[in-house]
Image (tube, rainbow, N blue to C red):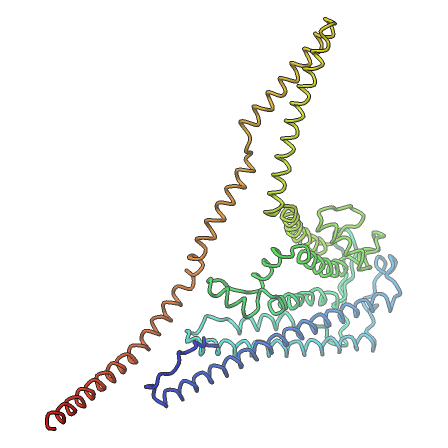
Length: 469
């Protein structure tokens, strides 16, 4: 926890109790460090299990709604959806209640993990304040805990059979309360994104120490930006997949009750995922489309998220197609060699045409034609030669040479500049070392003075004994 600064070797004048206190202090620091690491590992395990139970609860609620539509009725038909509805058609049987009990148990365990998580966060906050001697930060653990408890406590209790029906935009709809709850339970997907901070190499302890030395924070947002730099295609594909699955389920819940009236099979999850995919890609084939207000809202979210991810994909493709330093040098060398080949080829054509013109002197017409061709070739050769003289170094080559010179100067200055963020810390350490060294130096000087006086006394006694003898 607190920074353990290796001390210099103890001098013979160091008091024994000072040595003992130093070892006790280091032992306490190691105990605090071990406690901090233990708490971080527990937090990582809690977040992992919270994400697992959160996704499991979403899956249970999804299969509950699937059971109501496909197990009890076989398949939803236009007669059932568009005809006279009986709100008691959704029958809650023992199997449905089993789903509800299982969803409630998973939700309760998830809430326990969340409470334990914030308890560990509070302990880590206290350890940081005690170890680094910092003032209490402006943390909002309790409001964040209450907000997460509200989001993650939504589930369908057993024996609840409540349905909503009506007309929206000229289409009849029928929603069960379990479908509405499923849409709110999809918000638990943030528990998966939270794992990014635990399992990313950009948020490790070493990475956090490096970021702290440069006055920045190593969090999930920083890790995502770093992964977009290092492995952009995998990161973008992962977010594409999460959005397609999440929004596909939301659109299916919003649209499948009115899909039969339009003879569209939007009760299948794959069809809704296809709709989200073409919406995120800004394609819009028009084969299927939402007709409810909330279905359109989910598609708007998909469109915005898709534009962001597609833009990031285009930037990543542009960066992947750029040449590195060695490839840039090779490209410019090949291009220069091709220009030289064109210039040499033009000179060879001019010489060849001059020989043909010399051979055609016997025929006036042929000689005249050859002279015209020779003038054309000579003009083209002079033009290329002038271009080579005036534009021998292109703007790209100039920028490449300038980049090389800047890199050399930057490497020379980097050795000095790289230590600037640590200057304050190094000065504090040097000041502390100086303060510790001053009493030791005074003690050494006092010991030297005592030894000098003792030596003078012994010498005086020695010479006195010599005089007496």
